[in-house]
View 1 (tube, rainbow, N blue to C red):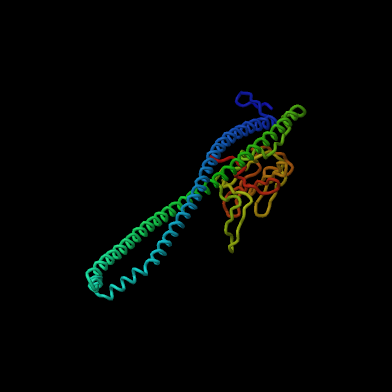
View 2 (cartoon, rainbow, N blue to C red):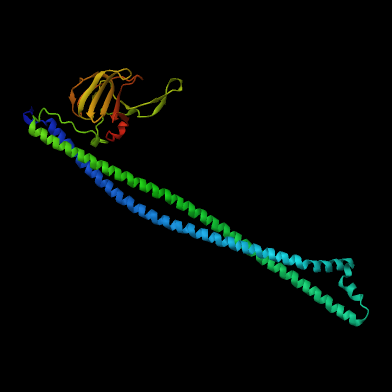
Length: 367
């Protein structure tokens, strides 16, 4: 088709040419996305390897801390056993000392002096004197040695207790670090799986578009390209569909809002605020499956995109298409009317495989 505008001659694109242009642009975008995902995957793989090495180091720290804890526990047990042995020795030696102390206490403040004066002659006095001195010195040495040994053992036991607390803290920290790294490694693995799935999906979409491209070429070769409408699969255009109207989102997909009497409302689509009378446009080519009033949605238009994929346009004041008509992406399907809440808005829904999907995952991101 050729149009003359202001003296200039402009060739209008045929539907097949428009489809070819869309396919080429989308394939280029998908390949760029696949390249970006591959680069991201390489970075994530590097991060994953680093995390795995850190996790191995943390595992060694846990093993070392556990071995240290076993060693400290054994040392603690040995120190406790030595203290118990010292206590047993003290108890075994105590009776002799106790008897002597009791005997001295009975003699009053004179103590050993009264014992010495009880001797019959000078020789007996000498023997008693040397014996008393030896016994006193022996008692003093025994008690002093026992006190020093017990003090040393208790100090050693306290040091072991302190070391045990430090090792237990180190063990807890090592386990906490290992658990954190385990979580990070699992998250990286999930991210890698997600990237792989996205790359596989991009490759699938490119394959579908290349098939569609071949169909376009056959259509151009066998039919009047100016009148033939080539239907493209909607899947490869996920995240790249144009908005039916431009405006802020008044209600989101799936969000429950409190209704009367505390009831909940779950939306299968979104509502986009737009001025009354604004033209609502098809987001993708397809066949009009329904165009009539529908309770709760004003005038509703449903477009069948093939493969059990549909888009729904509700709260329209009028429909500009009829059932059975073929529409292209960007064609006006109706004018925005008033939503039940009283505000002008367009209800828009996407159904994939017959089930509602979040439209925001299919539409281009608004800037």
